[in-house]
Image 1: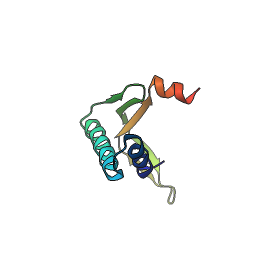
Image 2: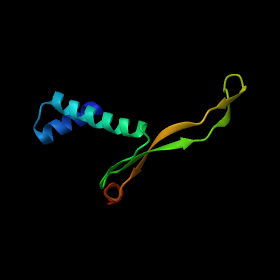
Image 3: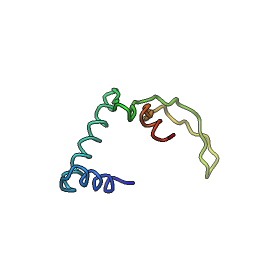
Length: 91
């Protein structure tokens, strides 16, 4: 499923135009993105929690040349499923 498919489902269930549904999805994803960039977390009950984690720096290797390279630490988004989501998946 992609964003267009999700917009179509939202459009059908909420009985709104697809363009408006797509706009609502964009607003939601942008709000989640902004909160994560600010270092916060987003919890949606029975769905899950979006947080940011710090990945440590490490030494990697260029697969073409075999030369070792330093990979810097970075922040990555993390999603942890909520109880409702886990229960729905394991019915």
